Length: 87
Image (cartoon, rainbow, N blue to C red; front, side, top):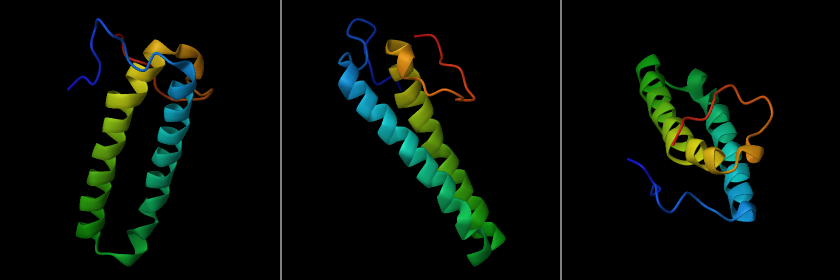
C-alpha cells in the first residue's frame, strides 16, 4: 500500500523529512538490537519474533524510507545498503 499520492508527493518539508528519517533509522536499529532475546526464548519463539521484526522493518523501508528518500535523496544516510525504489 502506498502512503503517498503521485500528485502530492511524500513529506515535502525537508525538516520534517529529516526528522522522520532520523527516527525511522533509530527505530530500525532498536529493532535490530531487540533480536538479543534469542538466548532467552525457544527457537520457535525466536523464529516467530524474527519474522515479525522483519515485517516491521520491511514496512519502515518500503512504506516510509523509500518514498521519503525518493522525495529527498540528500537525506539518505551514507552507507545505506539498499537503493530507493522509483516512485
